Image (cartoon, rainbow, N blue to C red; front, side, top):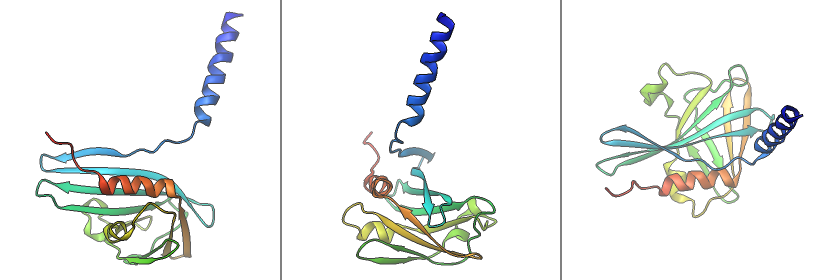
Length: 167
């Protein structure tokens, strides 16, 4: 009887934990003694209900330079990105064209058709608050629209504003 009660309690706890909402996560990674990377990785859906990984990261160097990128990853076989192909990003009021900088990142060479990287800094500089975004990607299968909820853009906003703690 105690054994069955334990299984029942563990089952209920497991269901509650699986049903819990996903919490915002921003991670900090020291890449070297002079460089830190701050990153958010979230899953977003396109207009065909396909899941993509949207990774936003900022690299900060000790000389105070900072770069901010959006890396999109399609699941293999689901969509092939065309390189180099600019990315169109929109909110309710503005549109941005982001150049494809995939080939400039040594971590992404050789360039894969499932991965694209784009300079997000101009967008983040011009946004005055976190807002829902739509991203248009082009590939061999045509175009797809990714919907980025405001909660995800809020994480990107947190990365934009993140500064390293003082020693």
